[in-house]
Amino acid sequence: MSSLATTVDGLKLPNPFVIGSGPPGTNLNVIQRAFRDGWGAVIAKTISLDHSKVVNVAPRYGKHHALSGEVIGWENIELISDRPFETWLTEFKRIKDSQPPGALIASVMEEYRKDAWIEMIERCQDAGVDAFELNFSCPHGLPERKMGAAMGENPEILEEVCGWVMAAAKVPVWAKMTPNVTRIEDPSRAALRAGVQGISAINTIRSVIGVNLDTLRPEPTVEGYTTPGGYSSRAVKPIALRMCMEVAQVIAKEFPGRTLSGLGGVESGSDAAEFILLGSDTVQVCTGVMKFGYPMVKQFGEELLAFMEKHRFETIADFKGKSLPWFTTHAELVRMQRERKAADAAKAAAGMVRNDAEWKGDDFVKQSDALAR
Ligand SMILES: Cc1cc2nc3c(=O)[nH]c(=O)nc-3n(C[C@H](O)[C@H](O)[C@H](O)COP(=O)(O)O)c2cc1C
Image 1 (cartoon, protein in one colour):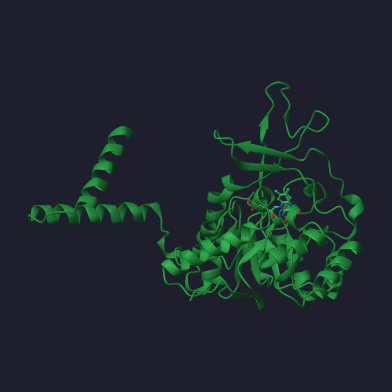
Image 2: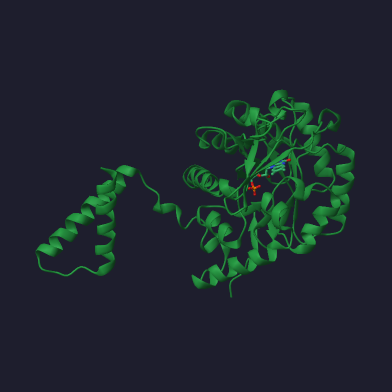
């Protein structure tokens, strides 16, 4: 019998499905709702010590529709939580007092001040949270205060801040990476060097969702203007998978035992299976919950279990990272294909008959070569 239950950084989770930081974890009511519906863990909306500095605007979402009308991409210019830190501490305590079946993870962000980070970690810890996610990745609004992605793009500062946190934290810490860098391995390595237990990847991709062809204004339009925001939802999944694969390779080679929480465009149990095959221990969902609601986790579980049973995997660990060895360089692909073709030619010359599948593959390669010319 396959089981979805998993233990990550000592956190015992009923399943690997985690609510990603954002609107689906924005207060006590929705967090408790998520646990009731069966999510394995909830990462609350990111908080900071002084909520009065956080001022949101409306509208703050923009959508990218496929020709079918389906929403495939989502831009937001939403900031971190604008609710008071003290309110959050009370709610964390109440959630933990209700003994939820999964883990409660606080997402935190502060300015480049050691005392602020330590105060925030200690007070959330006293409220009983099970773990932390450090938000080094919000691409809009906060970088102007040298927070979020402004820190995440700078491995040196990231390592220093993670060091402050690790000195104060008594529970597991994940560092959440921005995808808005050329090499996500560099900031990931810096955080892991400082001792964080895990990496979360990815946050949103800096974007402009579109321009209104009647008003000629870029969207989402606030008082006639906009600012670049963060792109999420199904359309970002291929980029998220690539970045998770890169972080997973770093963890496997240089930091064995550390963990990865993958996210970006997950909308099904099959999507989650792909993130796990590329090295994720847990899989987060944010925009998917905004589009389809909390109960989607039930279907996630059924789909992931069906996948596991099909391949006779009993636990998440049985297939975590199983697809990672199948990445190589383009030069290697060329070498292997050349060798295979030479072997086929040798077989044909020896009078051996090739099977249909191989012939079709070859024909396709020939046709696309001809088209490319
Ligand atoms: C409206 C909105 C608000 C978000 N707020 C936060 C936040 O407060 N902290 C954070 O770390 N990530 C935040 N995110 C990013 C998500 O947690 C996630 O990294 C990203 O959206 C990609 O995953 P998804 O495609 O499942 O949404 C937000 C995303 C959206 C769409």
